[in-house]
Length: 252
Ligand SMILES: [Zn+2]
Ligand SMILES: [Zn+2]
Image 1: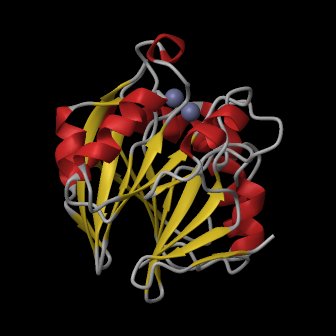
Image 2 (image 1 turned 180 degrees about the vertical axis):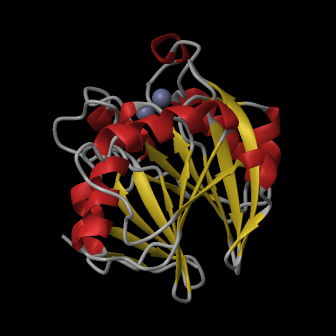
């Protein structure tokens, strides 16, 4: 399995694209989240209109899903043929459908490809991956995902990871954890924070952790605080993790 980081930024980050990754196994690709500023990186990394097989949305906040409409228009322009699966929690689905409807204003049907809408209570596998979900504490319904293939990846989405999520992290070789704030107080009740993430690191000695969605003015300090901590990384857009070998490469 490989994980390509399209973006690692917070909701309105001035530098880093919105947090988004592509999970690959063989020639099968699952995109996780697609915010407004991650879409361009997706186009440059995966110019082929057939490259992405399914998209999982952790929740329907703009920094996690507003790239969907433009991406679908691009796929239609490039005459994609393969159906595209869109997976999300039941509370997000109507909002995402509305987003697609708004985006396609003036574009006549039929499109060149079909959308297949699936909610998280209807699915346990996609392509070569087993999928498991766990809710976080966020201002809207957000579900973390465990993707199990040749290796296992956990991606938290937004919000504080609770017990249910911790059980999934326990099965993961690599865990992407939303770590918005430096302190519990600054994170508030809807976001992850560094002390909470470091407890997860301690509790899971076999897992490598990637901290993302860091508040822009905390980023430098957080990087300093985790520097030298084994198994804790702060990824950037363009990073490619080969989960089998542990090798990390970077494309600009
Ligand atoms: Zn967010
Ligand atoms: Zn959010």
